[in-house]
Image (cartoon, rainbow, N blue to C red; front, side, top):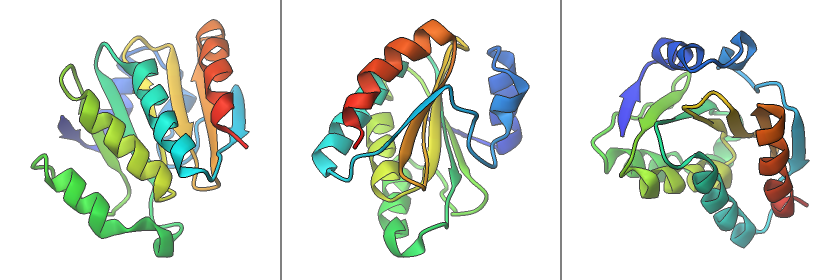
Length: 162
């Protein structure tokens, strides 16, 4: 796991062929499909595993871009300790940007789950330029990218909605 800056995250997205609107890291990426998240924590656990499976196999960008929206639910100290366990510097500033590679799958699944549970707006992007899976502090999950890839991903993701 490697921590990067917001500028590096934007450059990474562009280098992988994502449209420029996908690099607007201060907010939600335009969705081709979205569904409300289930409040059921068991579904959220399985959702984080599904997100992991959708991006596994190469380098993955994790971007937490909406932090500080619901401070009472964010459990900042848990997130800080989880990030810190990997020797990363976590400061609830404008965002947290991490590149995960082979061997980082368990950590990535955990950080996805924590960000869903603690109501962070975040997303992961595959390194093939075909799929972004995101979740909002407004409690919905969305996909963006190649239409056929999105259709397949969304068919699986919508089972974890309300």
